[in-house]
Image (cartoon, rainbow, N blue to C red):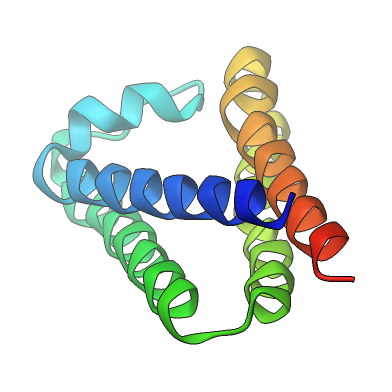
Length: 125
């Protein structure tokens, strides 16, 4: 169980790193997938790149944790990182954006992260 949780954590870390790169290099294209009702103007691309930096660095931190930390530490950090997609979902819902994106993309990500942490913690006992 612990190994499955670590594999999910590694896959999630790699995925968010890639998402961050897309936000850095194609911010307008990625903005459409976030779920907000209104897309920012092209001039807001720099603000979208802020999300790219956040996501890419989150992926790097996940990799560092997976390489250097005990599984239980990874699990607790994954639980803390779960606040990011939950926050994103609440922003989308609060702006009356796409419920499908809020629950499917952001909520699904949070659920996967919870599963990962649960598997790691369940296997660490």
